[in-house]
Image (cartoon, rainbow, N blue to C red; front, top):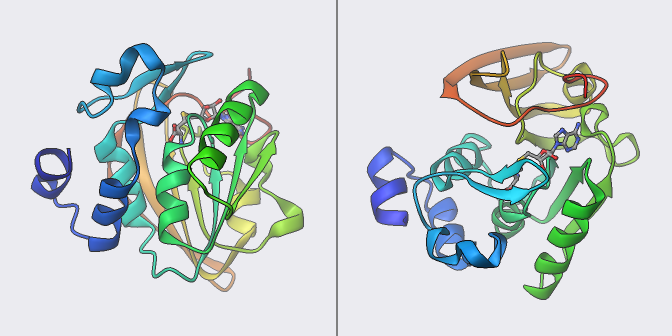
Amino acid sequence: MVEEQLKSRNIKDPRVLDAFIRIPRHTFVPSGDCEKAYGDYPIHIGLDQTISQPYMVALMSQCLALGGWESVLEIGTGSGYQAAILAELVQEVYTIERHEELSLRAQGKLKALGFSNIKFRVGDGTLGWPEEQPFDRIIVTAGAPHVPGALKNQLNDGGLLVVPVGPAEEQSLEIIRRDGAQFEQKTVCACRFVKLIGEEGWAE
Ligand code: SAH
């Protein structure tokens, strides 16, 4: 997976590549799908949700440009795989999932793997996590119709927000950098995620 899907497609951040070697992806897919765990595609995890393709997890992690000191907020805990990769890379990870069942399942897996630097919340992540803001980095792992304003506001000065934005069928992956009251936006590539559902996302 690391050689064929990540290194060959320009994932160069050595800390990101290392995290992919250390985290057992098969832990995060449904037990019957174990042999597919390292395939080059997303996999269904129930409740109409997916664990993203390895390359997309790596690309988004690389886009966050993590040095190790950052606090990171993730919207869309899902299987917990992206949270595990992030928790290998930084001190503190905050992750929000709207489906309690998925959050509890992810919490069990991440605790069993020994992670103690991830805080979980069940709720609408489009509103961010006001009590824990500001964050140095925010990553949204579901497709938003527009950039949620609350997430921009909860970014630290100099912070980065990585978010797929656009219509339900196809989004563009955007990196937004906060510079005081200004926000600078850069497009990375086209992508396709499940819907971000919530007050500043899609209607249910
Ligand atoms: N990061 C996940 C990928 C999850 S797919 C992983 O590594 O497996 C996207 C997830 O976002 C789904 O679990 C979905 O339920 C969740 N989601 C969608 N809208 C949300 C919202 N407003 N707040 C929190 N989670 C949301």
